[in-house]
Length: 156
Ligand code: AMP
Image 1: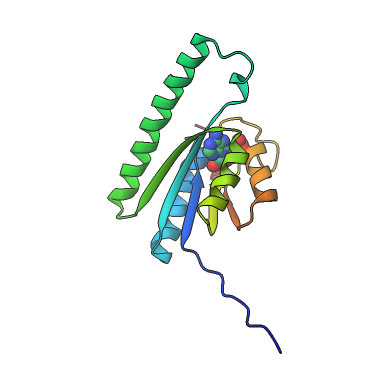
Image 2: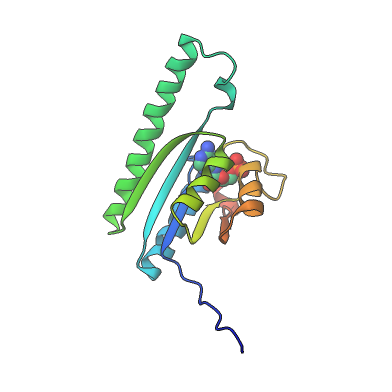
């Protein structure tokens, strides 16, 4: 007997954001798709904890707090912009290794589609994908849409 194939569904979309022009463009695409599928968007930013693991001095902690404050504000701004388009938005600010945290959230929140930039702030444009994007594409359990910039709007 032939098994009935399950139709893929898009009920939850996640956008990992690093606040670069690439991830802003990914947010635009995600908004368009979310409207079409009448679903919400999750924005996730990961504060990279790698550089803080060895020496946790007071200055490092202070620096980290500043990063959290800035990232929190930028996430809030994105949330407001999307809510103005009548989209439901959740934001997550986490610490850790970016690709690992993105994949953890994907599983935990049962994400159906990830939309992210081909590149980000780390600036390796000669490669097809940046290192976070490459790992997420390779290891994600759900489809990943990678968004590039048009030639007129590179970097930011
Ligand atoms: P990269 O692979 O670092 O060049 O970045 C590619 C894309 O991965 C970016 O456009 C973002 O969508 C996402 N990304 C990179 N770093 C982070 C981060 N720290 N937190 C969340 N998403 C990120």
